[in-house]
Image 1 (cartoon, rainbow, N blue to C red):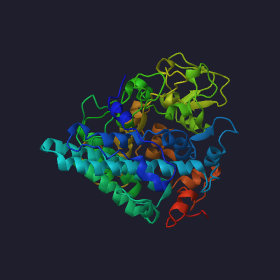
Image 2 (image 1 turned 135 degrees about the vertical axis):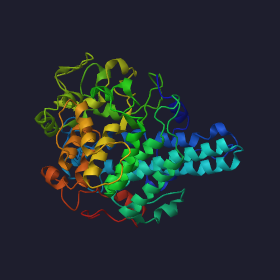
Image 3 (image 1 turned 90 degrees about the vertical axis):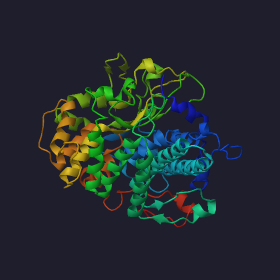
Image 4 (image 1 turned 135 degrees about the horizontal axis):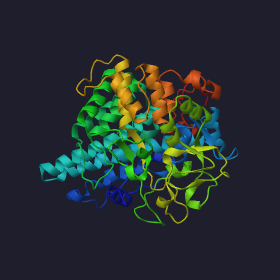
Length: 493
């Protein structure tokens, strides 16, 4: 059906490891027998790095539990007794022994390891290439790997604040004695990787490589990273370049953005690819992200999942209070209703709401043992977020970014108009509210609240404590492996 790129990825799919000191294994492709003179093999190590972004250990249950459930937009879901660890995320009672937090540490460092391996492999290939085109392709692929590393580190710094920089293959002893870097050092490292990627990545790829990282994907991530650094000028500049390119636009219908038919659409700047590759059983590069959130206890079996990360009543009330009907209908999948595609969400499902953005109609769910959402792409960066990031940067005083002809008001208006909403004055709070409505359930809300200073007020009733919950604890198991790792503020071990 889709994603030729994944055929290569599945060949190189890496295996999981159990701790940070074994990080090297995650990105490993056998070097014995590798023929660095074969240009057709250049992409393989990058393919392995792409694959780590989709591994179920990081992109399914642990991912949604840590990155979204702590927000006010989501509840744990499922049933009360299911996954006490996820319940801790919902109530801010987690500590450094929480297994889901440790999963996130391992997952993103796995991505770092695979990216490092790819960069090193590509340097070897480049030495052995005989044409400028092949050498340039090595550089381009290294740019993709550096983007993946930057994306991993962006998540690590948001989650933990201070972590070590692993920018090459290291031995176990080197990893165990690698000190953590400050947030500012980490953000500079991320900027460096993204600048390197921007310098070599192409504007686009052929249709044979849907979802492959291009220059505008790197610009988009840099713009978002810049918001966290309060580097308003850089955020506005990168957003403006994307907007001025005219290569992206909002789809007319909000709900269709998340449909299977509109994966890698003109609104998408970064999606993590998933596909059954036409299979209905056996091994395939599927993704469990949507399945984890599918309606629990629904029927038939291909229309059910685990029912975690469900929309909160607070989110429903917020969307209803704004008269945000289109985004309400697309975001909230209600128990006891029938979808426009004819799928019933049973009254027997334990939660009143499920995430409508990952809803996949039964006609797509053909896997033999279930299949709900196995072929669903994770939307990571959409064009609407670029418009809202631009508006925020401009309202914060950015004087850069004028080539697109947009200002904060026109950028905000464009997002609202697609949702069927009238213009409102462009203020920071209006942009923050629009981000919540537009990006709900897309793993943005918790971090937005923290970076904009609203977390204490909004999340206090859930248990958020200022000076502690801005970051998650460094997992105890990782501090045992590397005794130089400091614990996040507010945690005692």
